[in-house]
Structures are given as C-alpha cells and as structure tokens.
Image 1 (cartoon, helix red, strand yellow):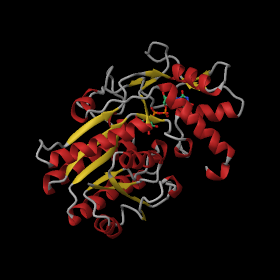
Image 2: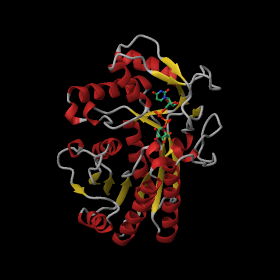
Image 3: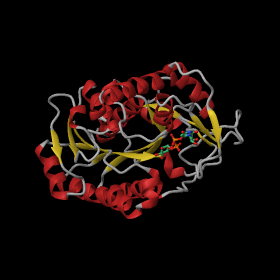
Image 4: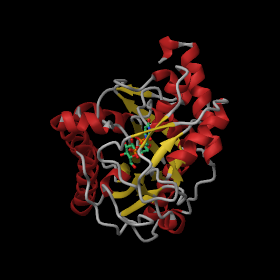
Length: 330
Ligand SMILES: O=c1ccn([C@@H]2O[C@H](COP(=O)(O)OP(=O)(O)O[C@H]3O[C@H](CO)[C@@H](O)[C@H](O)[C@H]3O)[C@@H](O)[C@H]2O)c(=O)[nH]1
C-alpha cells in the first residue's frame, strides 16, 4: 500500500505520517503549506506542495507516487471562522473534497480515510455519543464535515470508493515538542497563554448540569488519533482483500469525560501553576457534555486510545515552551 496524506504537514497530519511510517506503510504528502510546516515531515517523505482543490495537482500526485489509498486531512478547522466565512469553509472542505474524489476516481484510487469531527453531532444531549446519535451540527464547520461524509459515501456508491470516516473528539498533545499544534485556539493552549502571562486560567461557566458544573469533553492524544488512522487504513486494506467492505463511520475518542476543572488541575500539575482558575460566564454555543462511545472503533478497527490526560497536557506544555523559546517558529 502507498498512501497520500493530504494535510500531512499539519499538526494531526504530521502525526499520521509518523504512525504510518512506523508501521511500514509508504507515504507521500500533499499540502499547500498554508498552515502546514514542511519541517514537520521526516526526511525522505515526498512532499507535493499544492492544494486538494487543484484537481490536476491532486491527480498527478496520486499517479506519480503510485498511491493506492488517501488519508484526507487537508481542511479548514476553525469554528468561529466558519461562522464568519461559511463560503470559504464549504468551498475548501466540501468543494476541495469533491475535487480530490474526482482525482481519485480518475487515477483509480479507491480507498479513503476521511477526517471528520464530533462537530457533526452539535450539542448531543446524551451521556455517551454513539455513531447512531443524531447529527445536528451547530456551525458551518460541523456542517461541512457532515456534508463531506455524505459526499464520501455517495462517491463510494457511484464509483466503488471504500471509506472510513473518523469523527475526532477533542484532540490534544504531541508525540514530540516540535510536532505540537502551533495555531490552536483550544482550551489547553488558552490555559497556557494565561499562565505564561502570569494570569489564572479562565473557566467558561460552572453552572452546567455536570458533576462539578463545568463542561465535560473527551480529550484524545494526537498520537492515539494517528494510530486510529493507521487502524482505518489497515481495515481498508483488509476489506480489499475480500473481507466485508465497510463504509464505516466511527468516533475517535477515549470514552472518558474530563471536566474543564479537572483539565485545569492537570494543566496546573504539568506547568507548576498553583493558584485556582477564575470562573467567567458561559461561552455561547458550548454543550455541557460531549463524550464518545469508543466501542465501535474498538470493535471494527481494533482501536483503543492508550495515552492519558497527564501525558496529553505535559506533551502540549513541552511544545508550548519550545514555541515560546523560538517565537519565529510559531
Ligand atoms: O479558556 C477557555 C477555553 C475553553 N474553555 C472550555 O473548554 C471546553 C473545550 O473548549 P475547546 O477546546 O474550545 O473545544 P470545543 O469547544 O469542545 O471544540 C473542539 O472540539 C470540537 C469537536 O468535538 C471541534 O469541532 C472543535 O474544532 C474543537 O475546538 C469548553 O467547554 C469551553 O467552554 C474554558 O473553560 N476556558
């Protein structure tokens, strides 16, 4: 098998590249380097600099590297930006995917791992989100990921492209400091930013119907998430060898809920910050609880996350310190 990783120079993509190489897969990367960083790629990994929205570039990359499967991560991923610029998100996340799928069909590539998101569920009012939980996205970002899943399945039916859609929950951490997320605006980097400025982390709301009143999420280490892509790629390879073909959509989380207060304590332990967080009002649009059922991923992909919250937070902190020491890199 030879895999093209779109967005392979990004935060998650670079971890997927490493996981696949470590497992002996051949990989090439297609990345326009708009947010990706070429230095994240290990030596020897071919990089095609271009966009998935450029069909000719995508098709050439598939043919030149003898690609037999695609892991598609290249996308826009900022929720607030998607609210402000919906056409950008639909064009890049849905239009770009359509162009890539056309290129795959033209080049005879019929295996796809698609990067989806728990954002497809919106505000699920259930203790554990299963893949049967209704999808009601509450922002354009989540809509484009759900539309992407539909498109992937429709092309699967029309052209025999087999797929696994991975719905990521809250991704955090780094396998090594230089692979840490540089542009994130998620809770962990926001906590680090405050601590670095000598200020306590801010908790958005402690009056939710949860055990300690703060929002509960399912944080998964990015290295575990990368292993889930490898498991999905292997599943597609198996399906091709005669096993039942799966158009499979699975949650990728840990199944463990962590409250913002618990997260703040873990950040305190990793950073040495000891004064208590401050509580402000709720942030609009935040669901009280979003925690994955990890059962289907275990059953169908043999995937279970192994790394804990402490490892996620301490590895993210090491990446943060590296960036702080070298602001030019950030
Ligand atoms: O300074 C902060 C920042 C965040 N939070 C809270 O921390 C939790 C997590 O927030 P955040 O890291 O922004 O993640 P989510 O809002 O859960 O969204 C993430 O997870 C979604 C999928 O599950 C993705 O779609 C989004 O892109 C991704 O940002 C939420 O309850 C926030 O209210 C705080 O209390 N203080």
